[in-house]
Image 1 (tube, rainbow, N blue to C red):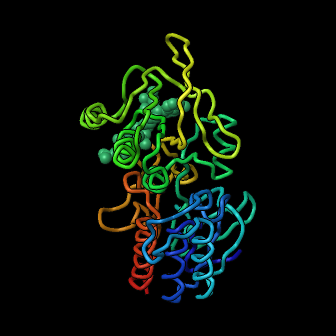
Image 2: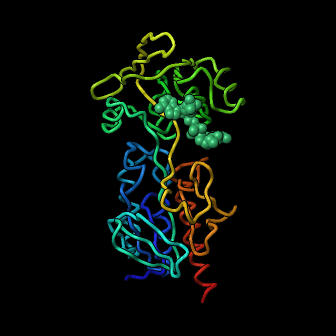
Image 3: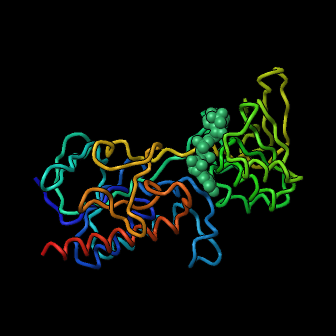
Length: 310
Ligand code: NDP
């Protein structure tokens, strides 16, 4: 059975940053990339808000540079997904692809989160084409300056993102599936009091229109059954995220939505030697740069933990 000083699970900005720091600290990190190597940025087109890239960079290109940097310091990057863990065992055990068993002194969890989608065929197709369907207004809103867009959702994220979009766009349609919001009252009032946000209650998108790029959306009112066609160029989905943390649930303390809990100001979890970073433990900021920052913290915490055991 292979044993490692430092195992990193996940390969988004958090995982790769942890790898660079851990490798430079001579922890000889081994990274298992997971189901979607590169993480959420692999389905993002232009990234204009990652510092150090003044003219922007494509999401996949940024991730390829992260990987190259981790490889430069000899991170052992492997294909495979952690499917089971036993953090009560000593040393801690992880199973890869349900068969291979490995152990490690420190484990950095960087498994990220996945945006939830409506599941419409047109939504998925246009998202995969990079044609104007997005789950991140802060990342992509800029490309729709002066245009009309729609956002689906009624939670705090949807309200925050609708408000963000209202400052850039000409008009924002907010599509709410019930006749009320889930968001806090303060957030609701903010969107209700913004003149260029039109809220469509009891409404569900039926289809995103357009062949290569978004040209509109067909919205059905669930009370009246009336269909309405919106002319829009951007279609944002803000119906929540799912942290990829299921396999840790018997060991690591998490909140009711599955986000891993870390001690304030650190990446330490409730289990000694297991650290969490990136979107798996962050439901508030969820940016590539904040994920990278916490990845750095996790590697430094792992290094200090190992030093304290020597
Ligand atoms: P939430 O789970 O709170 O809200 C999801 C919203 O999406 C709900 O309104 C839900 O509708 C709607 N929805 C879900 N599925 C569908 C669907 N298939 N079709 C249409 N609508 C759908 O997620 P958020 O991302 O908004 O928030 C996650 C957590 O993060 C919350 O605890 C939130 O408070 C917190 N947060 C706090 C912020 C802050 O304080 N500044 C900012 C952002 C998030 P319905 O209501 O009908 O279920």
